Length: 283
Image (tube, rainbow, N blue to C red; front, top):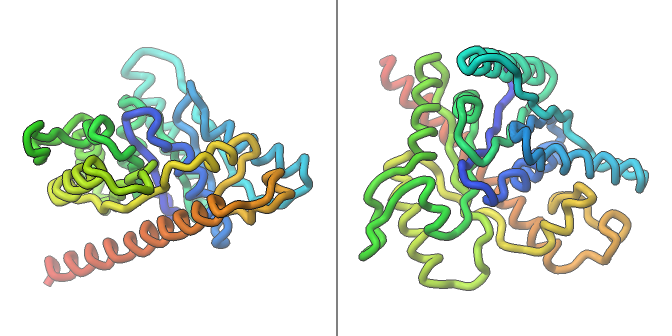
């Protein structure tokens, strides 16, 4: 297996901000001096691919050294169903292995639907990041709740897929991945819905063993970044954005810095805990 750390951004529901998070994580790592490769598994939308292309084009047009990840868009293979699945897994495994030999991190953006490749990609993860819009409509991919008191009553299809990916990783004798669920597009105002969703996620995190982290708030600035391939962690100036930086830029950058700290340091804590558990078992 690759020595690089593999970060998979996944959620079976579209519109959760997976590509935005994948791009921001990749660029934040580059800014921190890491070598990063990205893989786009969404062969239809190709949002991450277009995001990286936009960044490369804008860097060239504006003569800016923005830092661009090594990028690959995964192409589907032909053949019968079983052959396609075998060849697809083999091809993705080979790509991750090859990129992992020359990069510190490989960031994989998965599509908003469940298929054999999505599950397999999750099984390759060192860290799984699941952005989740702050509503019970999006919570439904992880779990179900009682309509009377909003208590968790069970787990849903995406959570089951993650459990299968964990099982596959265990069968190959790989250490468990660190699962981070991000509450994305958070309202800046308190509300009953925000409180109830937070309580349900906190309850579900104990069952599914994921870490719950506040992600990025709903900000127009993230949509403005996309055409030029920019991110909140870039040194956004009037030259790069075409407008003066605002308080929204500064706040978005602080949110992303807090998010990366939670992801990176949380991963170290989980790994130390796993090592401690392994040592106790060996003893």
